[in-house]
Length: 170
Image 1 (spheres, rainbow, N blue to C red):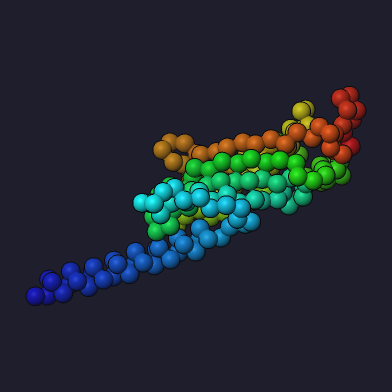
Image 2 (cartoon, rainbow, N blue to C red):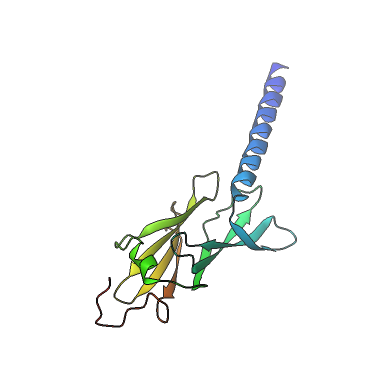
């Protein structure tokens, strides 16, 4: 009889842990930015495509839309994402002068994606030769031998930050 009681007690403890993990997962995935859209992937799934709008904190004239999978109550891999960044306002030469212009650029956005310590990061890199802003979104954890990533670009042509070829950048 003791074996049955131990089994029942273990089952209750395990169920409690699963419920707690589910609430943690919901809490982490609910942390978003400006939710633009939420599209269900079907009637028989708890997975949705979430689309967030993120503004570059140093370049308010750039908006990035990031789509990702939200899998409520599931330990599915949330690493698959897509990014599209566009000029949505003015960009000045002074703003470009104030950003990190190193080859590594700078992380402008970071969000936890799961209880498995995965994070989505967006890094801005400035391509001075082509006067283009690069926005790289990537997962911090390896999935099936690869780090998931996506790239979007915002050319500075026809902005206040554009420098004619041959003119030194200030």
